Image (cartoon, rainbow, N blue to C red; front, top):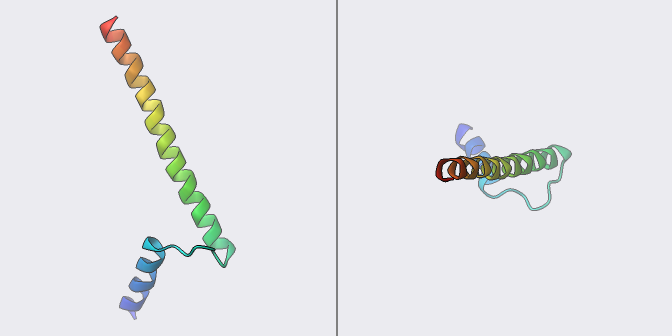
Amino acid sequence: MGDQVDRVVMKHVFYPPRKPKNVEGLKLDKSALKLIIGGVLLCVESLDILEQIMQKAFY
């Protein structure tokens, strides 16, 4: 029983369905997308801060 559930979860995590059949899947995809976008924005912001620090250090 546990192995079967694990397999389904693994399949869903690594090979997400192309079209979510239910709204829950859609919500999950959207929140994952938001997390990814948020992570990228965070990286960009920290690069900006890093650039400012570098400029202050050298000028």
